[in-house]
Image (cartoon, rainbow, N blue to C red):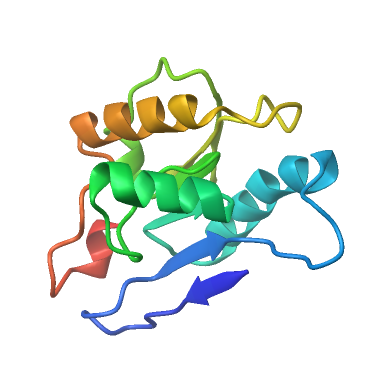
Length: 147
């Protein structure tokens, strides 16, 4: 799991990326089911702007398709959006929507952990979230109060 803690710096984003890697096991239903829940828990206890759950293949595919830098907001198989971003999110994605403390939102494309979404589903979610403005890059320096 990677956490990018910007603290109070106006030049470093507060974000979290849940990327589980194991040399012994492949991802399984337990990991897929737990990751969006862990993302929600982190978001409720730490003021982050955005966070995502993905595997390496999904991360690379989305980065290439949308020409993104590693730190750019994106949707993996789940995404957390701060209140400002959540207000822009479309409501008809094939996902579950879970509100968090401080009016944030976790959008979970895994069917509550029962399925591994196709990359086309993830691309469509990114396309729609980007079109709505929910995954825009933050201007630098940025005002943390807008999260």
